[in-house]
Length: 473
Image (tube, one colour):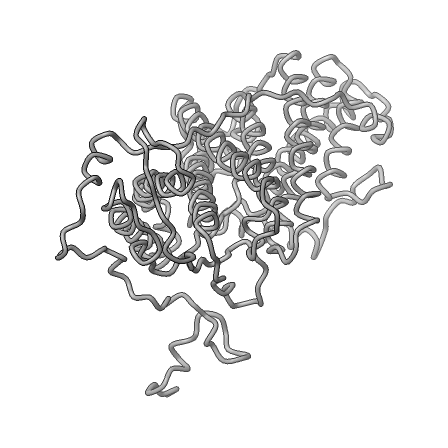
């Protein structure tokens, strides 16, 4: 379940005020126009309802892909290098000043983080590429949402969605890794924590953890079985028990352990960063727990297939401990009754409604959904062990301590710096028309979504009720 990143917004900037080029005089003008399109796309994305934002992601993606080559052309021109085998000379007229909203930075409840004033083209490049990486993660999130809808996808649709999500994760990982390596050459830390080395490294580890974890989704039948079991519209209430080959169950466990290791590294890096959003920190911890819990579940499946039902139940108890559903040191889970059972049912219904609406789902990195799968197997195996073949259930701690090492599945993709096409470079050799004005965006510079002016104590989103000229009655 990818993290629901909030895309940042930015102020309007005219590169013609900050850069000039003797070889390609129109470059600052073209770059300003492309940036204006990006600014408009980000603002329009933020202003549409959350349930409709996923359908608007391709427009934001296209705008960023159109703008980034111009940004790299300016960067190359400042260093005196060549672009597409053509030398570009760019002179800095004055230091660039730009504002970006740091969406990963912690803020007061009910308020969005303020825009941060940044200087240098490097900061503009980092925020723009980070935004593209967030878009890739959100597109992966949109693909995976189709797996949990009320209408169960076919095997072909499921494989296509997982494959597309995996590609988006690897693209996001390549961007974060490139930025992390490039940030290692800085002499000072940036003003925004979003583009600090620790956060960029954490994002690289996080995307790799997510890409590794979904590799088991394609061949893991249990989430679909549990989803079918609670689907009220399904008439197939009698189904044959699913089977997983022993070798693949052990392989899936090692893949999940590798994902957990990446999430653990991301959690450590975020701990070294300053003022990071608590929801992101909690998500990374939940992802680590989910991956570790899945590994325990697959090792339990491997043991059960070998006829060791007692060991399988112990692995499931270990999975519940890793997920945080059983206290550490307790070997048995107390059966929910009364208020506890009602609370659990309400949580299940709330999560189902989130998935149905497409808003706020999966913010626990799939931990709650994995708990449902473990509960399903626990109920099945305990009943089997009590009635058919009674086996002793060993403690789960020694089993968890003997877990195998993780196994990597993906080879990290190298980010390729995008370059302008030859015809675009040729067009920029001509000086701009004196009557041409750079397009900086049509949207207002003030953000409607900015809640910083809401009075203290007001309910988030109720800004209009407190505006001048309105009446309470």
